[in-house]
Length: 511
Ligand SMILES: *[C@@H]1O[C@H](CO)[C@@H](O)[C@H](O)[C@H]1NC(C)=O
Ligand SMILES: *[C@@H]1O[C@H](CO)[C@@H](O)[C@H](O)[C@H]1NC(C)=O
Image (cartoon, rainbow, N blue to C red):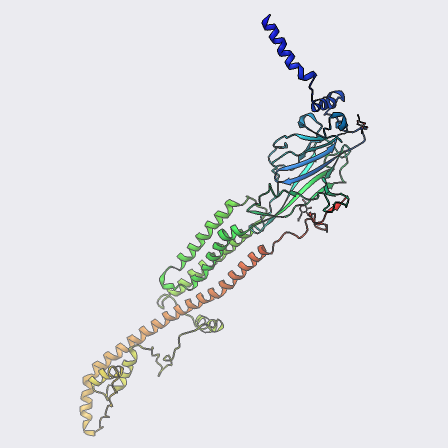
């Protein structure tokens, strides 16, 4: 009995607020959903032919706002204690089923189903947060100086254009002057909420228009007929790539020029080119990891790396040819006269190459006397041996070098009585002359050999210079051309080609 009493009291207590203290909101919900028998599966239209107008706006970040009028959700505020707005779960209401058509993750749903606001006029306002991943074709042509045109296309998968009419949101402009009437304007852009938006470090928003697209070629019954599309025209901020990839690439590429300054004798020429080639390959690897694997286009930086690689390959070939020429000797190769003419006279003259002055190279009595070689003394010795004493012969030049006045050799008196002695003297020194002649001949041969070798070296130097003169402008022009192409790759000043309107907050369309 006790227990029965208790449960009765409990029941009473539970039922009491239901009957006596039922609040106005509850009454309102009951009125809307039970008395008026709201069916969320039916479109909010009185007659079948009417269309529901749905307004759509997108806020960065993560908010899409939807608004429409559901006449069945109207009430008289004074009858329900002045309640002007009601918060209801979206599952209870008719929804226009608008989804992001070009989504990328197969998730058509919004990420959090928050409450809808229903006003007494029947106006339903829904602002669900959603993270949209849309499929966006990336144009890598000008990477890292590219801009992209991404779209977020919203359509209703359930209702066609006869049933709902999609529109961009209409907002009210509150005038600064109280006397002026309020004006409505179309929100033809993606709204940026300064509080909720953080600027991306990689992309800069250039244009963000929103517009309704109608495709007259498909029937109105198709849900392809209308859509509201939000466009994001974004430009990559290239600083990161300039610092990390472009600048090192260019610097390394310009090291190629140094190859032609490196003396062939140090034997590092080819090593240097190959090192540069390897360094470039590392960058190519880095870039290929950062880019979408597409074969539609070669990114700008990829083009540059390819260009540098081709150039480096040509430089390797040139280097090997140059080294081959440099180490040629007269015993292995014959220097033809036209080669000599072309590489030692014509080309250096054309390239304004400076050549060491060859003052001593005048042929003397059919002989080429090498500058600063000892051959000169020996040739002279041949002339002087008869009139100069041996000690004079040996020390004349030396004393001259040490700043002593050259001794004046007295001419020997050409006495007839001395003929025999002369003959004798000649016989005595004849082997010496033969020896000296041999030395002279040998030196002359060696001289010629060295000279020919020097000629090969000079040809190699000419080839080096030619390479320098060819590669420097090609590299400079190529670099400038490729990167200026990127530098001047800007998105167009207006979001749509052939449409003079800029879809910006500063130029509103009033309705
Ligand atoms: C709302 O209700 C009040 C009183 O119940 C009535 O006077 C008024 O006309 C109603 N308003 C409308 C728009 O029906
Ligand atoms: C962006 O793409 C849309 C079509 O998807 C096109 O109508 C528009 O002109 C493009 N905008 C720019 C700036 O290229």
